[in-house]
Image (tube, rainbow, N blue to C red; front, side):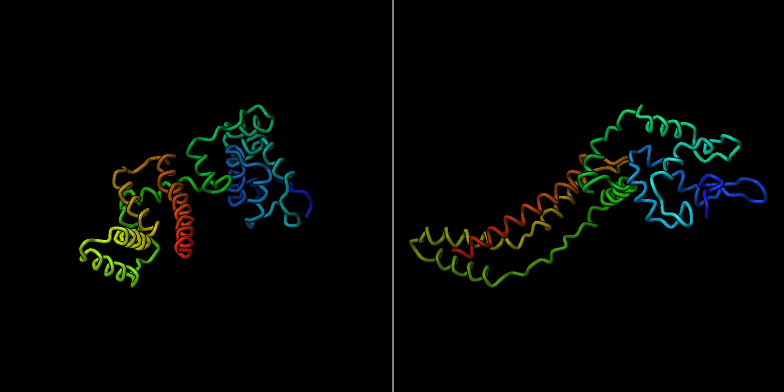
Length: 247
C-alpha cells in the first residue's frame, strides 16, 4: 500500500469523505494524550500495543504522529469533517512550537507518579478515586491477607513459667522480667503488620466523606504510607527473628 490518500481518521464512502470512527477515536486519543504530556515515544508505544495500523504495510512511527498533530484538516479545513476541537489543536500547535509552559504536576499527580513508579496511565486517577470512595463507604471491606496465627506452644509455656515464678515468694524479679519480655515479644509476633494497618485504615476511612476528586493526603495515608510501614515492619521482624536466634 502506498501513502494514504486521506488523513488517518477518514475514509471515502459513496464518493464522500466521512469519519472512520475506530481511527477517529484513536486520533482524538493521540491529541488528548499529547496535550496532557505524553511524548512521541510514549504515544508510539501506546499505538503499537493497539490493533489499528496507520498503513497496512508499515508500523507506527514518530513521523506519522507528527503529520497527524499538524494536520489542520482535523479541525475542518478543506471541508473535512471535524474530529478535533479548535482549542485542542491550538494547544498542540503551541506545544509543538515550544511556546507552551511545562505542565505543572499537582501534588496528587506527584504521589500517583511515585506509586506507579513513573508517569501513571490516564485511567489511574479516576480508578483510584473510585476504589478509595468504595472503602470510605464501607471500611469493613478491608481484610488483612495474613492468616491469624493460633496461640503458640511457646506462649503457653512462657505463661506457665511466669505463673510459677510469680507464685514463689520472694519473687525472682530478674527471671520474671525476662519471662515477661519474652512473652510480650511472642504475643507481638502474632499481631502482623498487615493486621495492624488494616485496623488503622478502617478507622481512617470511617472519618472520611466521599471525594469528588483524588486527594494527595488520602493517597499518602492509605496507599503510600502502608507500603512504607509494612516494608519497614518486615525488616524489623526479620531482624528481631535473627536476634532471637542468636540468644
